[in-house]
Amino acid sequence: MMNKIEHLGIAVKDIESSIYLYEKLLGTSCYKKEEVASEGVITAFFKTSENKIELLGATNPESPIAKFIDKKGEGIHHIAFDVDDIYAEMERLKNEGFQLINEKPKDGADNKLICFLHPKGTNGVLIELCQEKK
Ligand code: ZN
Image (cartoon, rainbow, N blue to C red; front, side, top):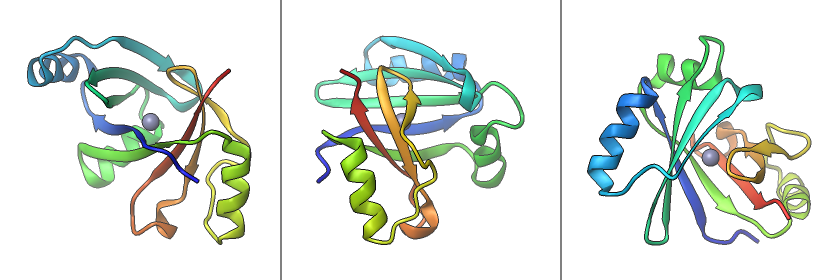
């Protein structure tokens, strides 16, 4: 079972100017900026009340974020759901016929284990599962 939406991921061209923009928009400071080198992204996180926003900027032209922006432009990139047990949830979804992009959970930003579902099987929406690392 999936819990609440953990965060929304937004693909941006320029992470620095976008951090500035979202700080103004949300009226709060970015609380964490973290590079995920394996994905070629820099992430920046914001919290408003219960909500969390993750900005994603590419660090190289081969990054999935760079490719996403080339194809679709800037905007909402993924919806992440919090799960208690990512292994069990991946197994459940596989058995339901969903296509997982990652065979095994991998390290994500903000102390999470993560896995993505292929958007082809979810009406074009990239879904991320994330479990807080214990
Ligand atoms: Zn995310």
